[in-house]
Image (cartoon, rainbow, N blue to C red):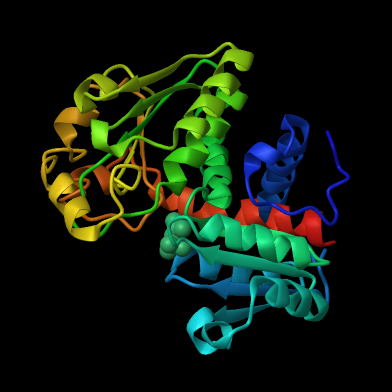
Length: 325
Ligand code: CP
């Protein structure tokens, strides 16, 4: 267990060692137990987290804010549109200034080819930890919550197979941050990954290579497939969500035309029945109901979507307590 995490940024989980991630998992479950028992755990009394959002959120905002309160501190909610960022505040200035007011800075900035670079620029200028609440490339706190959920359901995840699949949703070109974070993290926990998507929805090649390298080191499988049903067959987890064809086109209309070709990529009961008997259905939410996933699946007994959402709270509290304490 590596416990010297005070002051660390969490921009990607790939930048944390396995020992450090094990500490996060351990502390997250401990904080979850303490909350269930009604044991107060004010490890961040009088500390303040700035939460800067360039994009909407339900779970991320609510769980970070609740988490800071439960740790004895406070979270300030800042929307970019009500700041002076549009009038010239640079990433360096945000890092310098919010870093002097606060004990941590959390940022959601998902604009393609902007978000991750922006968060890193803020981190370079900040004297306090910077936490990635989702960018264009990564959603580390979602992947951490997903790992906690898989461990809760299966115990030791080694040898399990997780299908990380694209699914149809007409709403907009969603970020590729969730599948990229999952494909990188899960092999490090001994999980076989099936990455399933139509050809236009490829993830970034250098990150796929990193994920394959993680899988080689862990001696687990890493398959890239383009057949949704083959991906569902005999798997332990169907984690199917929509993402944009962003590595093919950043044009919204062209992206929508490509997405429309695959309207039958919905997780329904027939496809869930192809998975193992104890298989679970996962989704980070929000989901396009009866487009991306059938009600019968997302509301069914195999669905763990509310556990995933709850585990955002416990995972993030572990990150904050360890980095901001
Ligand atoms: N899963 C997730 O990040 O949810 P929000 O977009 O509502 O924060």
